[in-house]
Picture 1 (tube, rainbow, N blue to C red):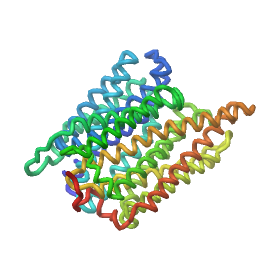
Picture 2 (cartoon, rainbow, N blue to C red):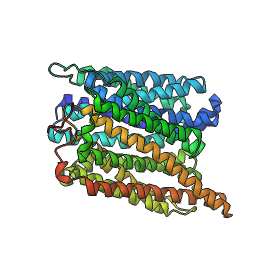
Picture 3 (cartoon, rainbow, N blue to C red):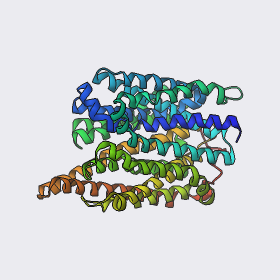
Picture 4 (cartoon, helix red, strand yellow):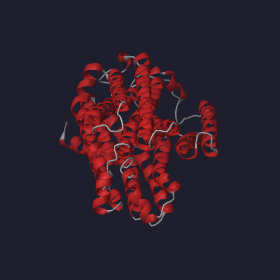
Length: 478
């Protein structure tokens, strides 16, 4: 790999690291933010949810926009928006400004992430692409885990504002370096019409469905927000399918889903996204609420997870993919993830960290590392080479929507089980432990189901190790 390619790769994966970092780093800082800005409980929830909502909701549109308007252009636009809105969040004087900043930050992430992935798929051929995808997976895995680990430490040392400020130089540098390091489009760009109504319906549908799932944790399964959001989302998605059947240049050509690699890959992406997010979400809460660790100590307890995920992605993932192929590596990763969650489900209230918790965390971290990048590779292998942005958008959107559903479903499982234990006269901490026991089992079963779908419906021969990028075979796309 040339020096320029290495520098370009560092630029791309650094931006992805920050995007994933910001999905988790705010969580531990929330009590300080609530105290300083006087946030309501609803406001606290939406400081986190607004980022997920915008990030997941705009991924499909942003991925397709990369194909239509250029990957480098969209990468720079995403980096600029992310940098500006991160500063806005750090300087936010009120609850409303902070939630607005987090929403716009999520939009910037939705533009930045698929653009960076598209550039990797296009500009790193053969073995270089496998190594680049391994580095991408390492940055993604490390970003989420490091966010959980350092959020409390940064807040305690410098204040919650620095949770945002510390990431600004990274995305600012990515914006400055992109024109120098990232190769622009070669040859004349084909002008295509823009499917406006398709864009509105798919983005609105994704936003409504994610809003509905995020509302479940706060308002309940049958609340107006949850039911109304779900109905609106389903209606918009049905409308989107009707629109795409007649569109000249559809946002998502529906014929792609005749490819079993794409349709099964999206299903596995949803299940994997739900299971992966619980590695960080449930574990961080378990350490603080059941083992009663301080936020800073809980963050340090999660640090081995980030190190393990980073090393597995960077050192082992490319070799395993070359040996087993992307589909079987994805299956292996989901099985390890299931084993990690099931190990954590057996942890009693007075558990010791070293023997009862850490092995489960390390298994889950390895599973996250081995399933995240191959999921993208599987979907990309079934998408035409002219649509790398769409491949990245489909992969990221399925993972993020799965994550939103997973947070809602596993939180509900934990709450219901804890309430049942409390009603039976069990003390508070053991009741909470019972709730997490149910949530970890649910997450483990979801990961196992994803592995089963991958094993049964993803053919290894159709997803060759070297086919880490979009396929060159002909697919009937209008």
